Length: 389
Image (cartoon, rainbow, N blue to C red; front, top):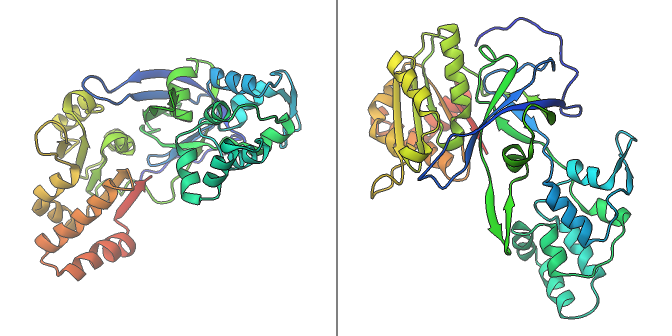
């Protein structure tokens, strides 16, 4: 791992985020992609914040103003009502407080339970009470609804501001894997973000943080509170050590940072990247950059899997298995194996592919192959590292 000059710790942190500027907001996906994937550049000049490849950036987002105004209207609240902050003791208006302090894009269970108590007797109260009494039904109910949905569906509920605020979840930071190296970009952090957009109950909705960065954060204004979340384990190996990176979709982010850093320091270790998404034309994120790395030799190998570009779907784990003999050879040469992205399906499929490769090309029994991946590679040698979510 590259060594950096000791610096004075920044005064900015998770509890005291830095008001950064969004200096770039551009799409990196396009037709025929059904996704809206963006490249964001966050200017942290003057913050004293220091980051390393593998770290994450915490973003504290704001709610869409129109959503806040609709909630205020439905509850008949005065936007100018003063609200005292519990931590700071300072006073802000209710509208300002809802914009920055609470999560409004998905309704909380506490609020739904309180609505049941407030509803007058009747069919609506009984139906909602039945949902609240069933944990699975309540999970499904809140998953697709925000506060406006519930207030429209169950109108006429009277709440005071003092009753309402404790029923709403406080804003939590959204952590994004950093997509840049601080060596070439000490004053900027790059993010690779899939903007969450969907429609439920007749209304368009968006992810809190991704929607804020894409649609609402003004460019070059200090309106994006951020902090650096250091990684505990997802670090680069020594410059001469080979590495294999599996990062489909926005899971590519930390590997872009890894390759930038290896280029900057002139690392000699071989680099192999597996990248996948739906279509090459619409979803090959940073295609020109990675192809240039391949041509220059920084990327020893670049294997891609675009699942919708042919009749039979192909994924990164399929490319791993196709190249299993060479992948096993790299592991025997001491290569570090990294995976970043979806934990529910992709990371599990990649894990099973790794075990299959160990059995087939390592000549190991099924039990020994599992032991090699789960124990030797992961725990003993600590060469199998995951950043999954």
